[in-house]
Length: 354
Image: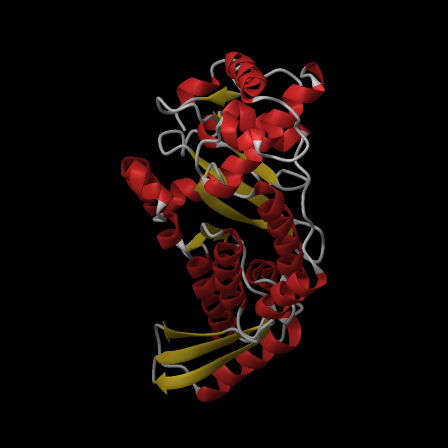
């Protein structure tokens, strides 16, 4: 929806009459369900209104004057403006908490064996399936915790470094040792890292190692100390280069309703290609205590495509926010269903993060 419809500040829900609130609710819910404008004849057929089409049209005109509804075409149907959607989400929406079966499906899919990256990809796909839109997960900007690091000789001055994380992930790197190094020196360095630094992040392990060396509390010789530093540094550097965003289900945005506004969808897909910028938007939700909802032009990035973003931070075992999960799609997302799903998924993912 165009941002020009949001210039007028929306009134509080309490300022609407009970009749206006009910008609407004029916229009918004009808639009979110069908993606189509809702007219007075449709509303007159809804049970419980007991109003003539003429009376309903009068209320619709009043809601349009208040900036809560708009008529997108020459038809008599109305759709909520972005201001109207914000009023509905903040003051009227009745969320549908995930059922026990849905919670079990989410937890089962996220807890499959494998590295944390696999869980993050599963989360993004899951959110896409739940919402019928695109699911997004911002990868934690932090390093894995060490379980074991082994240095295997490949030649006189080269070695294979095998890092096993606590999450079960395994990564290999070939190290240029700079000088011929014995197999015993490689073994000593491997044993030192595994025995003394297991359970720490790479940054913490490096700091602890340097502190021990500075205080003369390590039994490592010069060659082994250099190996330890080299083995840890290669992952510290690599971790900072990892992608920060996983997007799945972008094809869901090309549904039948979207085909009538293909330019908006093209703009949205272009926005999604700019992953770094999308990550910055999600990063703005990190400070939130709960799920945040950005509707249309409320966020700068998606102002042109008029899309909504539902995002929730997830935390590690220490309660620190380490990333954000979210959904992006048209403003007619089923907020009442998707918001609690995103929130529960964030909490479930947080349980897996060390």
